[in-house]
Image (cartoon, rainbow, N blue to C red; front, side, top):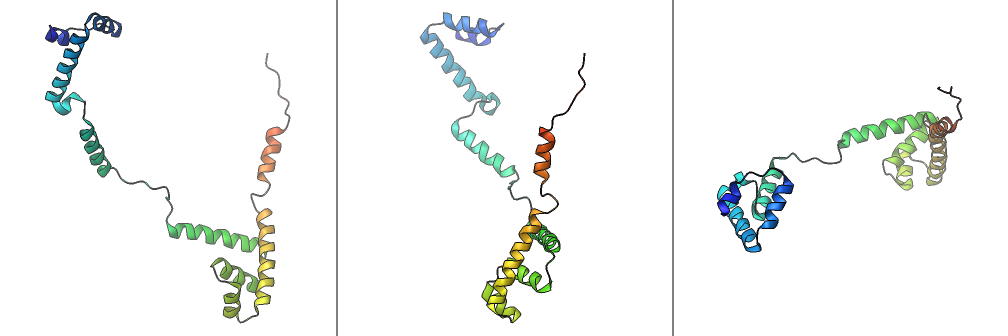
Length: 167
């Protein structure tokens, strides 16, 4: 009887549910045991895996997959972008030669004392120049090529427009 149930054609899912409801609990348990035994005999062809088989399959697949990282840009590329943006800001700020040197050394990580030693000037002068540099660069940044674009966008989005009515 159980082999007949395994090989009987099923016309629809509702018909399958109807056939299952007619089976007793013991018959359903025997049927499920036979299905499980058939899956074990078929092995990989059954498409049903044990947890150990799944873990092994996932490990093997991970070995074949190329690792993807979030940082797509290389360190030299990032340095190049930062340098070009710093050059643009220095040009826009209109810094003189000593201010540009102080700015670049400060951005490179030098302390005020070390900048003064390298340039052979007093620390007080370095502090004054840094204050001037920061103020000018901040102003240049705020008046840069993209400054105000968000406000322009908002004004355009919120602007009332007249549109011809369609009939």
